[in-house]
Amino acid sequence: MKLTESMAMWPGSSVSGLYIGHPEAYYFGVAKVEEDQVRDYAARKGMSIEETERWLAPILNYVRTDAVA
Image (tube, rainbow, N blue to C red; front, side, top):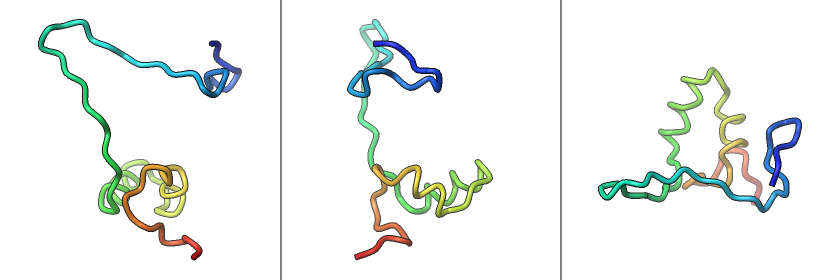
């Protein structure tokens, strides 16, 4: 595995993680993102809702506003 000039991992199927070696450490999955979370995130980042939805599309838990049937 290596990093490209844009800091992406190569090959694309590479996986990395941070694991804490402590007896009380625990790991959790990240759930899908709701619309109110997208609005809040977009406001904090100074991005439009549409751009934020485009970047977060794989983890949205609702139908995007510009989705085509």
